[in-house]
Amino acid sequence: MCSASVSPHHILLAFQQGVDGVFVGGCHIGDCHYLYGNYATSKRIRFLKGLLAFSGIEPERIKLKWVSSAEAPEFVEAINEFVNTLKQLGPSPLRSMKKVA
Image 1 (spheres, rainbow, N blue to C red):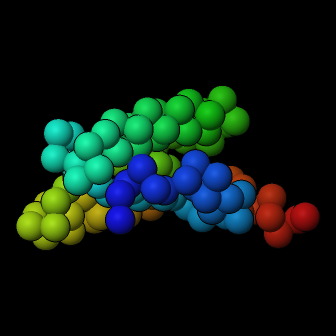
Image 2 (cartoon, rainbow, N blue to C red):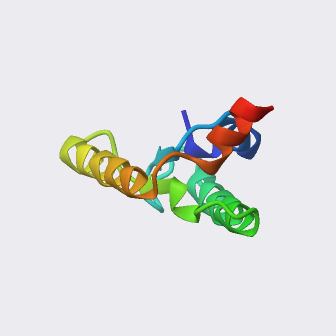
């Protein structure tokens, strides 16, 4: 229900399994139904981007977007932009490592 319930463990597991990118959407800052969930999400995603960069993986492979359920066009635009970014980056470098292992 809350973007803060998206575990960093699950995001890292997804990358480990070879996904090209992870999109996390949440309530706008200040509009969180759980008060501070989106602040926690923001900190986690910032940390994960740094961890990916440290590991040699493009941090652009994680996208965080604040979008409400009433903003369908904005959501579609964000997803399309993210997909285009992933197409430019190409397949995850971890995907080829997964096949070798």
